[in-house]
Image 1 (tube, rainbow, N blue to C red):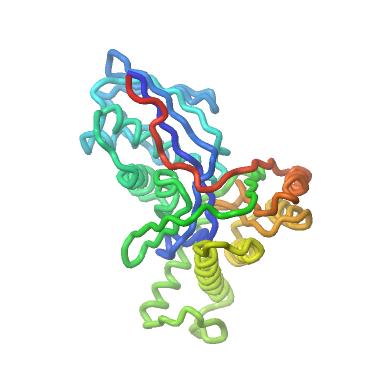
Image 2 (cartoon, helix red, strand yellow):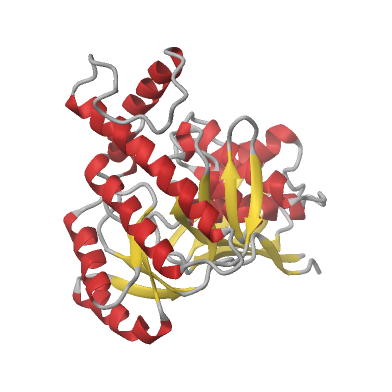
Length: 353
């Protein structure tokens, strides 16, 4: 039996560094995909060939080693075994991806979404995209209590442009594909997920908990009305949290319009990036410089993409400025990749045979 599954990468339009706070986000699947092609073996071995990394791994389904953190292929196998959707026979898998790797465009989540869907398909299970998203999140985040929300796995599995709410209940709303021309860029700087989250996550969660414990519900409150014992850094972190929450709400509202205002979306993206860069320091001078150069060349706006400390960003522009924007990105030491938003989610590429 041959079986091939693919899943898209994603960009976060609004709500970067908000999903783990329980705040809404808007993210869109992009037309760069990770694909796993597989064929059945006559034994119980799983052989993986990671073409982009020139790496190969073999696992025995009857004797799986204990996984280490971020060993997602093996964690996925353990999850499938524990929950009863591990295929009976082994398989060969060839893995390739168009998504920039380890750069904030959800290459890992796309691969894990495709991996879970592939195993479910090979086991004969009838699977739904929502189930795949939840399973991939459990393998990528919950298994070793890793940092992160569920935005990446949801968008890679469901596809489209999704508005995702986490409180009081998890809920997704499909939005129309945002208009305009979109360009992803790779800064070729390694992202620093753990370092960024150490700065951006834990203290903000503490401040929000204190905010709620005091019965505060006025999300429009700003200094000097913060608690007097908060130091300058605490005030900056909370100010960033509140501003990004406001910007994300405005961006979501604009994207939900029948005819969204591109200039308005661009300004909101720039404002979002400002707080991400200056407020919680997730950007880099190179990414800031690429965005500034693209803006000078006609881009309406843009922002860093993903956890930060390096990795990717993206910009929005009119078609008449596309060539100039791409040139500006390249001149700024970035790799420009034109993308389409609202791509299809996880899918079976070749029916079983």
